[in-house]
Image (cartoon, rainbow, N blue to C red):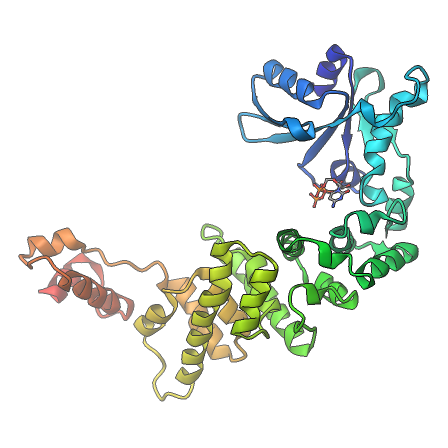
Length: 405
Ligand code: CTP
C-alpha cells in the first residue's frame, strides 16, 4: 500500500494525470504516475524495500520507477518543495507543490490528482477545471503559453482529442494555430516529432487524427510535399482493414500497425523525399532502412504482382512465396494495403494463410546421410524441395526423400 509508505515517511502522495483521467472516464489505464510532495526517490526506495521489488532512479529529474516482479511498473516523480517559497505553515501550502506540478501539465483533463495517504485516501484534487472539461469533452490548455513552452503538445492535443472523442476548445485551438503559424513546431527536434507522430499512428484508428493534423497544417513537418487527398484516404482505409484482418488471424506473428500506417502516410513521397523525411525526423536507422530501401523492394514486389495479373496462368504458390518471403511482414502488409486489385490481395492472403510457415522436413543432415557431398548445392536442393512442397508436388518426409533421390 503506497499510501502507508508515504505516511511512514511523512510525505504527501498522489496518483496523477492520465490514470485519473481515464479512471473518471471509466477507461482502462495501467500507467500509474505517482507524485510525491518531497523526495520521490526516497519514497520509491522505501517502496522497493517494503514490497521486495526493484526500483530505478533518475537523480537529475528526481524521478524513479518501481518495478514489480511481474514487470508491472509505477512511475514516481517529485513535486519538489523548492518550487514554492511561501511560509510552510498555511494548509494551502501543503497543496502548493502538487498544484504547481499539475499546473505545468499540458491539458486540464490531465491535471487531476487523487490523494493516496490514508487520512485522505481517494480525495480528488481538481485545481484547473479538469472534471468540467471531462464532462464538456474538451481539450483545453491551462494557460496561453502552453504550446509555446512545449510545441509537442500540438500533436498531443490532436491525439487526445481523437482518442477520447473530445474537441479542442476554441481558445485552445486559437493558441494551437498561433503556435504553428509562428513556427514554434519547427523548433522541435526531429526525434520528438517522430515520437509524437508514432504515438498518433499507434492509436487504434489513426485516420481521423491524420485528417486533423492536416487541418492544422501539421503534415508538412513530416515532409512539405505531404498532403491529404482521396488516394491517401483510400490507402489508409485499406491499411486499417488489412491490419485488423491480419491481427485477428495471426496473433502469434505480430505486425506493427503504426509502421504500416507510416508507410501509407508517406506513400506519395518519392525515394528522395522519403530519405529526406527520415533525416528531418531523425528516424532510427532500422526503421529508416525499412521505410526507404525496404519500401523500394516492396514497391518492386508490387510491380511484379501487377504484371502477374496479365499472365494466362496464375502464379504458382512457390512463386508467391519466393516473391514475398524476403520482405519484412510489415512491408508485405503495406503492399496489400496499396493493392487495388482483389487478386493481389488474395495472393498475399494466401501467402499468410498457407505459405509463410511451410517448411520441408529434410535438412542438411538428411542430405549428408543420403551421401550427397556438402556444398552450396545443399541450398539449391533444399530450396527446390521447398518449392515442390509449396506447390503440393511432395508431402511428408518419405516423398521428400524420394524427390531428392
Ligand atoms: N505532459 C505534459 N506535456 C507533455 C507531455 C506530458 O504536460 N509534452 C504531462 C501530461 O499532463 C501527462 C503526463 O505528463 O498527464 C504524463 O505524460 P504521458 O504519459 O505522455 O501522458 P498520459 O496522459 O499518461 O498519456 P497516455 O494515456 O497516452 O499514456
